[in-house]
Amino acid sequence: MTVTESRTSTLTPTREITVAVAREKEAPFTIEQARIRPPQADEVLVKVVATGLCHTDLIVRDQFYPVPLPAVLGHEGAGIVEQVGSDVTALAPGDPVVLSYGYCGHCAQCTSGMPGYCDQFFGLNFGGSDTEGNSALADAEGEVLHDHFFAQSSFATYALVKQANAVKVSADAPLELLGPLGCGIQTGAGAVINTLRVRPGSSFLALGAGAVGLSAVMAARVAGATTIIAVDVVASRLALAMELGATHTINTLETDLVEGVREITGAGTQFALESTGRPEVLAQAIEALGPLGQIGVVGAPKLGTTSEFDVNNLLLGGRTIRGIVEGDSVPGVFIPHLVELHRQGRFPFDKLVRFYDLDQINEAAQDSLEGRTLKAILRMPH
Image (cartoon, rainbow, N blue to C red):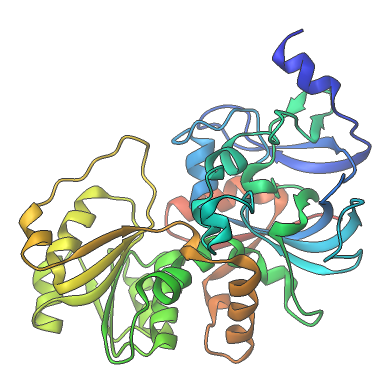
């Protein structure tokens, strides 16, 4: 029996759903009808209200990461619990939830409060199936659709997730808006608050003023940084950065990054976050750090991408580079924290958002790639 036959034979899909499918490398998404099986054990079936479109969805569609195709992507979902498996105790039908990434829950990293570095992270989030190699989705012809993307595959009207990565939020929270908190927004904000631990009165540099970088700007303001520099090449993004808390901006089409940062800060910035995924930007940012400066890296280029920099820029200044996954966030703790900050008006990430219908996913993707949209959110048809 072939692998595909084995995986198909384990499917018991019963509910008809609508999905956006990535069928081929660099090809447009296709809107299709599919079927999804019921939840089992600790799984939850969620009726998706809306899902954020993240840069990671697009680089996986384009096969920067080797997720098997055809696949249903989407990993910033929010919706209502429809049905629960027999072992679910923390959620019930009707609960509003934000979906986040998958983790095993029992390795050394998970049990120490760092689930973003789970021993099984890549397989659980990029493997294209569950841990036994099975998919919960079949297309209209009964063929397997790879799923479990970030343990949710929420470019769909329904998503099957573990109760561990479905975070309950208050009934009055703006659910349609909240999906991006599960990945992009928590990555930027968490990098500032959880990882770098930006201090009151400090200086912070956001390299890239997209959704992740601007989330970092807002978080730096919450953290009390008094010099907050946003860097980009798009004037409108830099203007929005000022509205959201930046004290200075640098357009690198007009100003050298290192010179600009040193003119503003003197010795260089204390904290920085690289979200562009461009190795040359990382090299410049290291040079823009002050003594004992720290830079977090969240921008994801193709696997195998390298960056060159003068090692002495690290050694002599005691500088630090740190890779960061999902903002070092424990979603069940950090997402409600961000929801509350938004409710208080201190974290207005709604200013980053533009809504699209699911069947406009290719328009949303193009607008995102060309910089017309910072954070696209896809509304689901029901």
